[in-house]
Image (cartoon, rainbow, N blue to C red; front, side):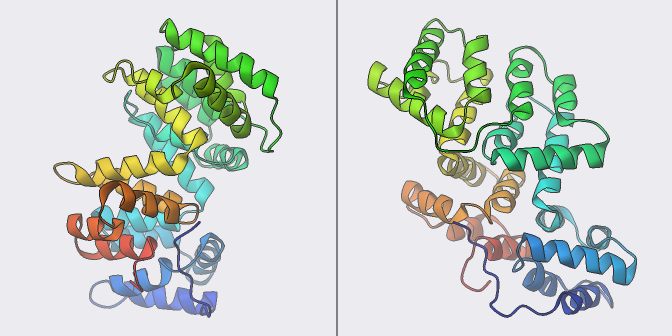
Length: 316
């Protein structure tokens, strides 16, 4: 359920590169031209543009963008132009270097992507940073956070729909027992969340609700100020209903005193080719305001235009 609008007739890659080059030359940058091209090309097309641009002009397109653009608009265009796996590697590296216990970016990358996408992000991390993602996560986190995040980013879950109902019952009970006694970082609780397939976790959590009368989410709300609990809730949401999780991130990013551009940019670039259509619908239902209107009210200039183009607003 992507929102990205790619024209039926796309110019050749060489033409796109020529137009981008033109946008960078002369007196000042033609931001509109950059938006009209990059905001309407899918991941494969953007990759071809980068390769052809480098071959033709002997310069990395990202370097050219970096020279020409500034601030939130630059970051948005740069993250969007990156290959999705490279982008995740970049965001993960940033998150480990500036890690705080309220930072949920690593959970998003580990749990809201497909198991295959997580492997690609880890390979991209190796290639770019000459280290593994798991060693950086282990190095920058401590205590219970490390206990949870290292297995999450190291995981390679089964991707199919097969579910073992007996196991779901047993593990729902294990989760409930540990949560009841506030053993939130218990090894078994972490093992279940970090290794089971998404289909299996859904079955376990459905059984949890049927058996114990409450969503696991509600039971993990016990102490709203506990940051480890909020990371656990993010883990559960990203595994079971990422659209709801990202709608919430957007709501917090846009509704605060002053916009959280970092979160807004991250959600739009990482979900535009995945499920942003559903996130937009959820946002509209929850907030009685369409997402494009909320973004237009809160942002300005080229940054606003690029965001609106990526969320599929008219023909922006």
